[in-house]
Length: 273
Image (cartoon, rainbow, N blue to C red; front, side):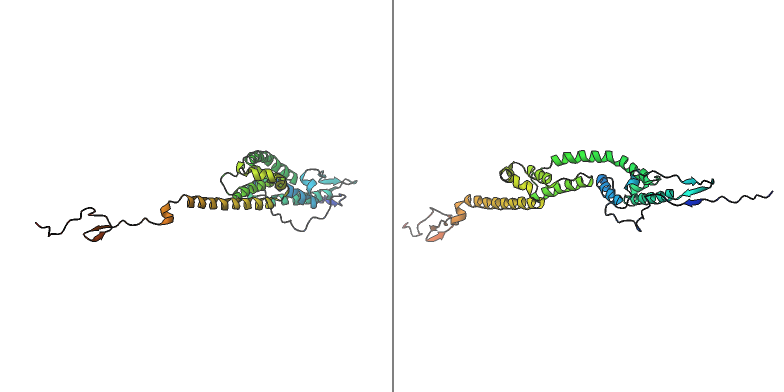
């Protein structure tokens, strides 16, 4: 008996989703990649990007996944265009995530099927690590001291810590930065700190650096001048008056500068004997 059945086909049901916003024609360029040390900063950048493109709800798992198929009234099974739309947008979001992580991190996301799965995996992997980084940074921040290093080097070290705070999503305010700088100067700088602390905390960090470097240069100049003055005042008189006069002794009518034969003047051969 011949089989009169025809191959089954799926009809695409028109989309009724409100999430059918057109996707960008190309992937956006993102200047920062997740490298394991900057998770919170990276997440902040990505959150703005995904929001702009209407994808944040996808990576956060807030969009309900539509059924892949629908059954019509006559029993025909049809592809659900709402699902296809969701799949397209979710894949776009997943690709965005994959493109802005290092290769070492990216290979750990290859098994992720959805953008939400990848997003959650990164949060699980790095939030604990970020907390540990913040604790270490806090300790190093409290321990920042100028010591014997130059002012420029000390402030540069402070700026490096500020950058690391930003990378983990914990940026420091200008007031916090300036306070850490002038409280780490040490007792030698107490007079200027006490006199200008209110002004220091209100100015920009660049202005504070210029102020402190200027004071340091004047201190170094004064120290050099004082050292030169002390050296001059302690120099022996010979250095000022010159060498002492040479003693001249005469022997037999001849002068002897070295003083040899002193007191050995003898009479002539005709001594009358």
